[in-house]
Amino acid sequence: MYYIGIDLGGTNIAAGIVSDSLQLIAKKSIPTGKDRDYTEIIEDMAQLSHELIKEAGLTTEDIEYIGIGSPGVCDRENGILLYANNINFNDVPMAKEMQKHISLPVFIENDANCAALGESLAGAAKDVSDSVTITLGTGIGGGIVINKRIFSGFNGMAGEIGHTLLVFDGELCTCGKRGCWEAYASATALIRQTRAAAEENPNSAINRLVDGNLNLINAKTAFDAMRLGDHTGIKVVDQYIIYLAEGIANIIVFLQPEKIVIGGGISKEGETLLKPLRKAVKERLYYKKEDVPQAKLVTAEIGNDAGIVGAAMLGLQGKI
Image 1 (cartoon, rainbow, N blue to C red):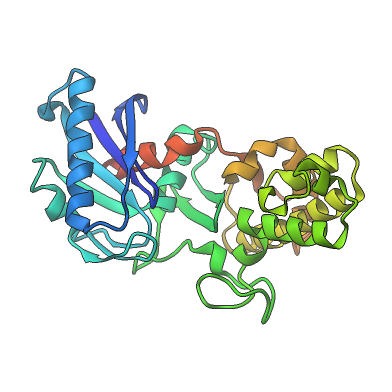
Image 2 (image 1 turned 90 degrees about the horizontal axis):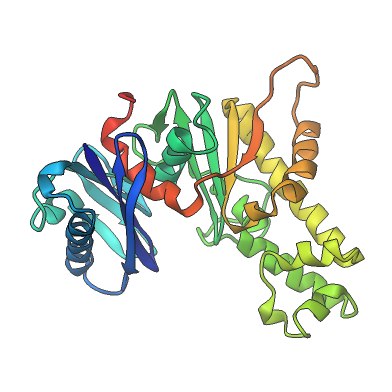
């Protein structure tokens, strides 16, 4: 059998067909047009599914179900998206609306949870039972997988690790609170920190890398400056790694997962990020015995496809 996974984002809708051996055999994406009515967006998702089925040489009868990963809070039992601020969906009967256009069962789940499930089943955490996947992007997304099943709490809201407290009364977060981890360790936060450092140190390599236009700074800029031996770049990266390590150490203390998978654009730094991060995390754990097994920090393997694969596997949790 085959399964369709849809990753609904604020910018694009990405969808794919996944086989029962976890192979992504077809993939396609279209713009979301997030300001439209939800009925139009869901109709596009169904149309995209029909197109994928046709292009893969399959029929609807070959597809067991559709899984949808969406931003926000989901009522999984009833197929309702309760709230998603970046696509303006509130109490949307997503499953029923989707089934108006395609006659297949529909499962829904938070998109970060889907990405975590994808990495757990087909990516960097496929060899362990318990894992946490962290996505470093505009914010910090998180998904918890226990015994190869998504854990999202009794109300579907568990795993919002980006909004755990890092600094009391600290930086203002997009959620309205102050001091959230994502206000210090997201890609957005790193860009802000890099820009501030460049303003304070106009002779740094950071400024040269962007020809003096600080609006061109991205999450890679400080790392590039660090590689040039620039003192300011080194300082920014070192401080960012401390912020990241503090939050990861908290996750380990709470959950003790076998692996923590780090995704998002910053994860492409690979060992340049992970080597000092592992050391910083270890220093922040409350136990110091060397013979105690510790969570392994690894980078994501299937990246942007994780959300598609995880969504496609929603109906099989605990069966594979």
